[in-house]
Amino acid sequence: MKKPLIGITLDNEDKGGYSKFPWYAIRHNYLHSIEKYGGIPFPLYHSNKNTSELFNILNGLVITGGNFDIDPKIYGNSSSGARILKNQRTNFEIAITKKFLKSSKPILGICGGAQLLNVVCGGTLIQDIKKNNLFPINHEQKNPRNETSHKIEIISKTLLAKINKKKFSKVNSAHHQAIKDIGKNIIISSYAPDGIIESIEHKHHKWCIGVQWHPEFLITKEDKNLIKNFIKNTKK
View (cartoon, rainbow, N blue to C red):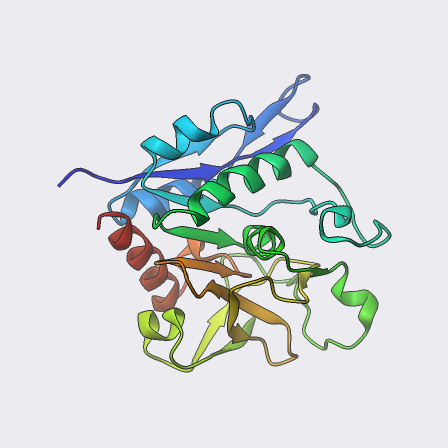
């Protein structure tokens, strides 16, 4: 069987560090976790000129996270709680995600990718979790990202529950924002103990999950199951 080609959105920086000129970047494990379970990762640059052509050749989409926020104006809020904005990246991710949502091709949103998926569907975000002073869990964990830091409760009868066949799991955590109001046709599939939404699904799409943690680290059996099931469904 032909291996599925999985589009993975890149991060970008204007200059500094790696190069004096604008550059793209992605962590190894985003790519190699896809390859491990039978997919071929295909990094996606930020241009809306060829979204239709890219969509046509891809079998699945991973919307990655990064050290930036979605412009709050997109979901009708002020920019007071946002940190770094990367509008070219966000605009591309919105465009390619909309194309996948109109299809049956699987979509996996990771961390900021889950937030983007919710915003594309008309939802909103908590712009800074700590400013609310209501959430006892540190969602920007102090321990290394390749370790778990808190528990989540998985809601029964969701796709995530069907994949993992259990009520609780442990996840890593690296975000200062979170989903607030869920978008149209979005359902919640897990919560953190402090009430933060940890994962969402699109109820009319064949396979569309957004998770607030980073399963590409493959820390737990549940992380491995999620990536494995995503790739499996790109082959159908």
